[in-house]
Image (cartoon, rainbow, N blue to C red):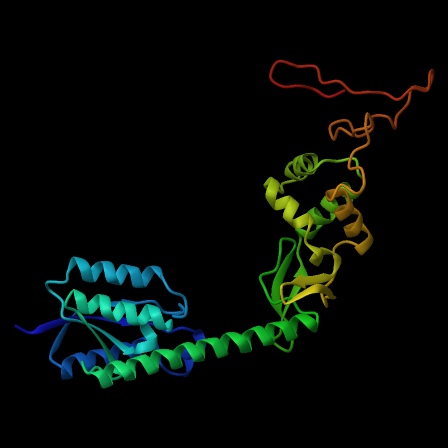
Length: 304
């Protein structure tokens, strides 16, 4: 009876897909390897664009579950290189042992597949080198991100009110969108000290912008709206190259209110967004401020 196998291919980045090691090329080389070693390919698994540096990937767990359910009909799992299945040293060695225990070999087209001490040593060295490569890539990436940040450029997905675009030099920058007006209004209302966040959410919702409680609070805490960039790479803050939506003075006042350093709403002088003219419009005879009321009609309440 001919031996049976499954194949797993992965392209970790778009750049690899363009410059070589493409998904289709990996599959072809794995199929050729299977044919040379007299294996019948029964299924192809693939995860184009996913990283192999993080353990516990869903696709890998899915493959292992498939193998356990079909272990009596499978003889091998074939990959192009060892780091295609996992770059984490412990995860890869554990996977190799787990597959051996259920009688399924883990084979690499470009790798030492010998069941000898020398083969084990070769796979161990390869795993360590792969982890070193991942760590160096991560280190270079973090250094590049920090450099971009200190030059005033935001590295991540643009927050609400901004969007990511590429400038003429193909550099990623953030620019305001039509939603910026909602954040500007939210900050300005909060800065008056007369509105709670619940009031602001209600006002914005009436204008078509709905926000959850935690979402609004997080956005009011984000200094990017005042033109400042902060992150773990630069906790002290950097003046960004993007256009601010609000002034730093407005942002600082809002932070003071959120921190309880300034009264957010004066006692007995709370503003009701349904009656914005209360206490501002006064009776022409006695001079006292007018108040509002909400009598109930047939189907709704009416504000006067």
